[in-house]
Length: 329
Length: 278
Image (cartoon, rainbow over all chains, first blue to last red; front, side, top):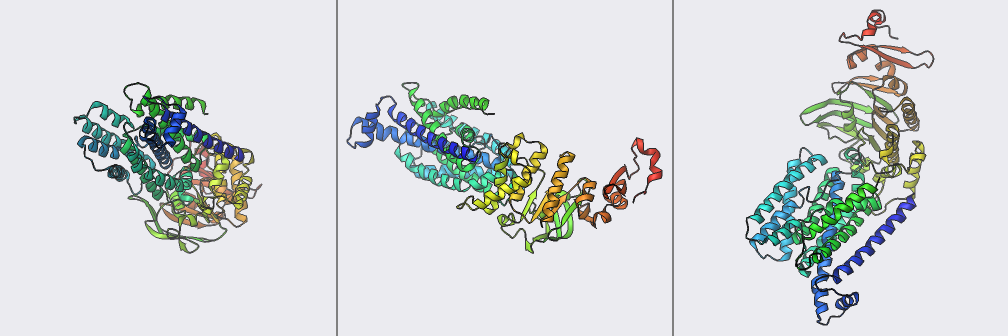
């Protein structure tokens, strides 16, 4: 029984890694200019200034890698939040964790201020932290119960997202740009964005794995976790901050990309079981898979123009999630 | 390992539940805490188990303030089973019992062979071999209770606090859980449990504490505490207390509320039996 699960986890994680790599290759090859895999390989390895080189290296590769990072960030943030709130509907967007980042992102977009990408990402995370602190303060009553945290989060989320929409609607921005931000998109993103975001992903993932043993215990309930020696208030605060950092970094480059953080952790649990050490890794891989796939579809499905990837994420993800709901148990 | 409460005050917000309560529990004692709903039994247990921070006073485990010791270290000698075992319906019994090893594990080291042995022993003790692969959501109330008890035992505690360990169980499984606890107690485990069933208290408790309005009303052997007088003062009921000749057991049979309300089928016999007692 134990062996079965161990073997299954290994197979699942290895399989997900392979699927991700294959999808990344497809993502780089597809676009307005369709490239064969040899052309892709050539573009990756040959530094000569060919058109393949420009398409593969300068345009598509950074965008695909960014999809990996954003997908992993959102999925891990969702898994963390579902862990500490013990609420299967917890998600960076629904809980208002990314809403603060959304307001900051919308303001920067509308004002058109250029403060540099590193500062933009940092500011987005700060916005998320401010939103998170507000939620915490609202939920506080000599400690924070998961239920109060969830309820305060949902209310603050609605408030801040309506602010975001108001900011965008009252601007002279093109509708397309606003839609990309609200729906979530990686349109016109490149190496600079990737460079500004990936450190948060790596640090966030490592720290999240560090919290995984405590998350396993928190899943048993408040009393049981406290009884077993987990400092529940501390763990909850740290994990929420991690989720804010991960989702804030994602929002700064991709806008309000929904759904990834909500469903991917459930898919991950269905595949590798309840142990958070594996759930977090599987979530990162599956989130990356969903977003690389969605972004590739979003770029190609309409021909000339591009859909916000967030639309595809929900469009593909929701039916798959419903299928899973019918299959499992 | 001694567990002591000194001038303990416990409260939920403005609501004071336990007032200035002092209590010494020695190693290997088996203590039953009784009292009416809302008297503070569960709150006292939460306070002793450091799930609730005291408003005043201290709880000492082995002469150290339980809130000034690392909570993970406390979890290696003290286990608490509350009634709210809400979480993790998808976990299997075996996975739940493994969680009890958390206080003994470090992040780097992970599970050791000894962890595995303790988990096996706990599963064995709680008679869960056939259920080890079952999900918690699929268990009956009694099975679930045993699964959580096994998790607590996997902590290898020297002191075990239980909040109504036999509620929701049928008679067979009540006796099974209580017999297991009595065995563990004989092997040196200190047990403090809140209970409702006075006859089980009489049978298994070696020391009984009657709680009223957040204070200790009576503290002594079952024979000292389970008297018609104390039951009237603590629970507000009139009861027969007698020794069953067949088993030698003390039996409590509450038959009426002390405020004068008498169940209909009891009215004729009440006068003759009042204070019939032991």
